[in-house]
Image (cartoon, rainbow, N blue to C red):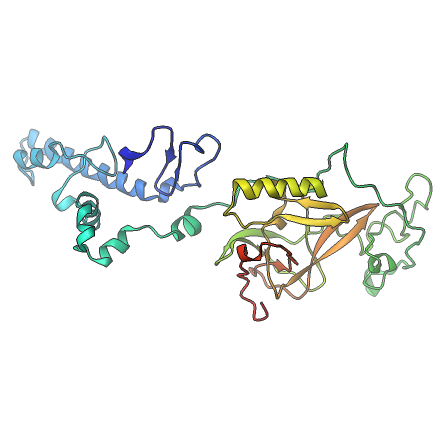
Length: 362
């Protein structure tokens, strides 16, 4: 009941925030134009407009459809339980659905005697899918395009390799250079450097003479697939590819805040304490002792869900001495298909987690 809600709480038709969290949290997004509240308001406005039109006709001596006494009876002290402060009209102007809800609210004691049919009750109770499938938006986060480091506490840069790429320049008719046979690519290292500028002290990570157009610079050139978030049945938010991705091609990079083991544990403990029912997990290992946390700052890759039979896999890549995580297609992915990879999730609280990937080998 609206009168039972403390003034310090926040609410709308989808959810209510108690007085303890109303100042620190936000209500879920509500599409006002498509909301139930908007529909009731529009219907009430039409009722008022119709009544005004009839009153104007009678004032001008025209024949009205209803008598003055009837209109007074309809509007007299009849408050709208859905819209406090607005006039609510009974009779033929109230839909059968509104009348059922009115009866359910006013005669709530009848619930104890099972006098209200299950059909009426089920039509009144809003399913949780309304919030999840219709009104909700992706969770709020700060979108970033590259990893964020603490300048005073970050992983050490890997030393440059003494090995150089042995690929040769090829004409376009023979294909692209630095393909799957490139030693840098096999070693998980991106090519760096320009064939016009031989290795010198200015760039100790120079390791390729094929130039910037070689085929082993996907992360540096940000050659990502076009993707967008979408609700995935039973899994919350997921990510789909718009145009499809071929097997072996780069999909996205997993980016976020780079944190160490201690910070990772502190953040997980704090989140588990404050949000005990939130199963979402955004931390991925970058290298030994260091992790990527994409919960508050991340890219679209944070929406990719787990699967025991995924269509993508993770690939750590050394780019000029810094480790980065690439998400690569393990098979041909059709346009509109949801992306997934194996989280390799390990926890001591296994009873709190249920895999919903739906794969045959789950």
